[in-house]
Amino acid sequence: MSADVLAMARQQLGIAAKYLDLDPGLHEVLSRPKRQLSVNFPVVMDNGEVQVFEGFRVQHNGTRGPTKGGIRYHHDVDLDETTALAMWMTWKCAVANLPYGGAKGGVRVDVKKLSIRELEKLTRRFATEINIVIGERGDIPAPDIGTNGRVMSWIMDTISMQAGYTTPGVVTGKPIELGGSEGRVEATGRGCVVAMEEAARAMGMNLQGAKIVVQGFGNVGSVAAKIAEDRGAVIVGVSDAQGGIYNPNGLPIHQLYAKCSGRDGHLSEYKDCETVSNQELLELPCDVLIPSAISQQLTKENADKVQARLIIEGANGPTTPEADDIFSDKGILVVPDILANAGGVIVSYFEWVQDLQNFFWNESEVNNKLDVHMRRSYADVESIMHQFKTNMRMAAMIIAVKRVSEATITRGIFP
Ligand code: GLU
Image (cartoon, rainbow, N blue to C red; front, side, top):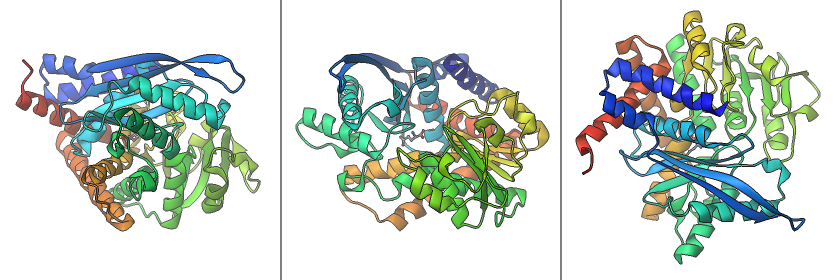
């Protein structure tokens, strides 16, 4: 599966390289990660047994600045998947025109099986192991699937204890009281809604009363659903790892958010709905589909059955290249991950800037800056899409690959 994700990321790069007539040497540089660190580390579990975990930090490309990207705790994490995700971070930062390259990290673990104490020990030991490659000027982690502000606090504290002074800028997505930014928790979901508004405008779709299905009720999906509901859309289907719920008249998202967006609640506890599998959810009648769970959910097997007219990729890599072609043929607009979910890393950038300058902005300043940044990135991609007569993913890739390769040429290859 993960080798497929890396192949998929490379295939997308290959197509963009053709559009840009990219130099083969540069193409080779961009298709490989700059640095990959694999670590195996022990944790003493609550029952006294020692368990060894496998973790990674991959830096794909740092030409435009320090590398940036989340840390994922998930049982499917491996080196190839982490590499693909690092590559997507390079493109995402470039599309959003942030002065960053891309990185990603992860630990192969089923986080639900850990106690809080075990989670803290695993995090502190992993942070220590990757300390040789991360840092506030070099590579800055953030939350991703299975991690959150609390995990970021432990990483920040671990690195600070080893440095001998507090280094808030070493990770983003921290709680506000430790140098986190207002608006960071909601940023990815909020950015998805901005991308949806821009796409709806271009398609002439009215979002008031539009029916939306959201796959995944983690930090991205739950917030996107909540903000979309606030703005007048009707959320008819949502799901978590256990499965989905559907009500064509709409689901009470604020109520579900209060109960189910934490570590323990499950959507299946809600009764005024039909239950559906995660796969069935993707095929429900709706105007907009927001896949916000894991990669490779929309494939050649189900793409034909998708009823939405607009897809906003809250997750990284939810659509395979074959499904992309089917959506293009059917006239379904796919706003790609590297644009649609860039809100998270955009506000991570704001958080890092605030940490480095020790001067903080209020929530509306952050949200306004995010809004401007997202709409500008969307407009950049839209204009390349028209210019190259391609789909939106390729347009975003073209911008990203062009920005990174031009930076490489301008810097020159050392020595
Ligand atoms: N993990 C998020 C992503 O995939 C955020 C990364 C960051 O903020 O650095 O975009």
